[in-house]
Image (cartoon, rainbow, N blue to C red; front, side, top):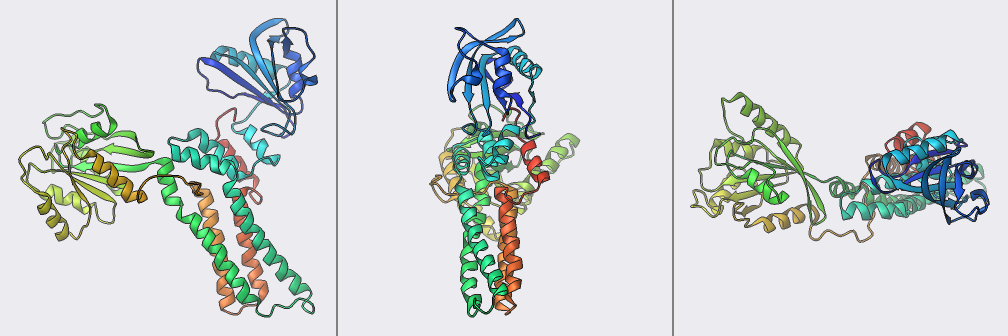
Length: 463
């Protein structure tokens, strides 16, 4: 319950230099007084000033548990806006557990996952979009995800949503007032005026919605499949990109029979790279399973890197791979440029034109690591049109937020349609309120308890 005093280990459960046990709630200082002893017998922690650090020991009755530093935060000037105590102890897993057990023994209860941040939300310190940015910040895997999370944590999305909601609320209030007092408030020409406002709000929502695809790719990574015939150089490319010998490389066709996956940070872009079994007709049952898995991955890829062996003939196996490239982002690598060529770049372009495909072709040699920089540049150009930078732009990377934005956009479209159809003003109010409510789920102002509980259940313990 909200009034309970909760406690949890706020650092990773592993041996480290320090560990932190966090306590939050009305009884935080009283519990701390029961287990903390100062080295010089100074006043109790409950009598200390906020935002101070104290050196001493944690005791369970008369048994010494650990030597600690204790930080005091008095409400409302804390993360949760409640009285908060953070015990910084030695970082062993056993000592952290012992301190937590002692804190619980003397009055606290174990915190649920994300409960500290949930209290920060419930107490009004942050909104729901900021709360979600906390877990995104913890899970950030590149600079973009980090900066995007920090931007939302500082309230960038919250402020934009609040401005749109305030505009909607103003129009709802005007309509209701006009309906209640038609003698003094005229609605002549109001539909045309409202239509312009609705279009402006839709444009703002559209801008946010358009950031979703790139935002998710930058945050979670581009699902990249390396495909080609056996022995085309797929595993060699994988090893070059990863920077180590992750895949087995031999001259024997069909060496890769299972799926190999690696995550690569490419100048701030995450590539979730999958090296697949070579596509060819085979009677080998195990290899055939690998080929079938390759085809499944090709269907779900964000990017296909198709490796063509330029030292061999282009055959029906290659043409089958081409069939997976339709309506896909793909780059074709003409590999083994260091060997005598059986197919040239110009000939390959001709084949693509015949298949009505228009994918870029890059000549490379994975053996000599030539052309790899061109591949990296092409990926960035293909997905993000130039250099990757954050520039304080708000990116939507959360499918829940996207869904709410889309629903609000659709409700505003209904308002526009009602205006065009000459419907009465109370029809406008209904759809305006729907848009207002949908946007409120992003900030948490209209979110239900079940949704809130579901969001915070995905947090790590102690946060």
